[in-house]
Length: 227
Image (cartoon, rainbow, N blue to C red):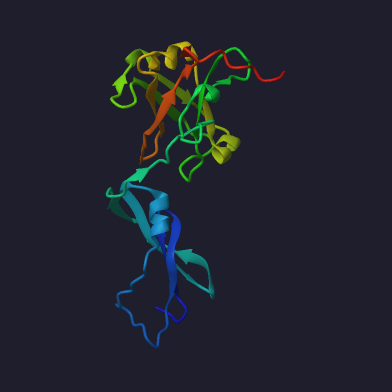
């Protein structure tokens, strides 16, 4: 032990907590050094059955840092991370998806409802994101329509998608949306979830009311965007 020795705890290779600088007037060999850890770093690295934890010893008079040959493996399985909810797009002031929420795809061949998979600290370029849609009749007493369900996989997402989020268009309308509607019970519900492959985070379902009545029937064909 030398005056000025600096100990830095490393959590999965990331510095955590303030470095501890040895002062030989107060510290002696064999003392236990306590370093308060930063929960933001722990949360950022996620859960693990064997998280490598170590320390790095440096000194201003020595160029090469010293580290234990083998890190200590710490079990961190009590952390539960949840993804932020998918966000329904173009809802009315009450947060309901309506006929006015319908949007066309880029080719102008199919239309449906859009949800945004929002950016988060978990979503990174190159990730694979699996999204799911479930449809229900009768908003007050939901009954699932299994044939209207849909899943989709976004592979190798771009940096732009990671930064701005992923827009998912649920289409075709006749298959996945129209079965929600009936004239006696025009208001139904949808549930959207998503997962990021290989990341220990739990999905958070988004439940949204859908009202597809227009006049005496269901939605009219929405106007196509200007070419």
